Length: 89
Image 1 (tube, rainbow, N blue to C red):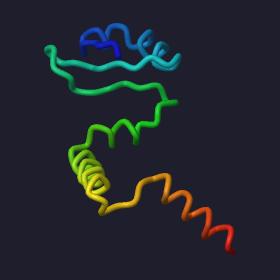
Image 2 (image 1 turned 45 degrees about the vertical axis):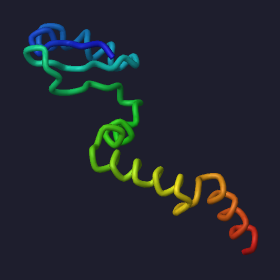
Image 3 (image 1 turned 90 degrees about the vertical axis):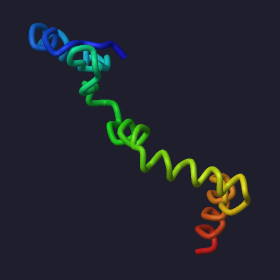
């Protein structure tokens, strides 16, 4: 992901938007610190946001720990069970 400062973003907005439209993502910085992200519209922003959300990360880690302890069902067995139940209808 390319980084672009706010000053450069203001100066080259049209070019940067065209590049984003073509699929490039940008990390927007202010005084060298990240403040925003500019993504092409084709990127699933919800997945990107969830991947970095502390609460989601904690829940995902807890779920993986439960799976390792045998307290949860893995994805493949769950899909198999759903298919079995669907075929019974």
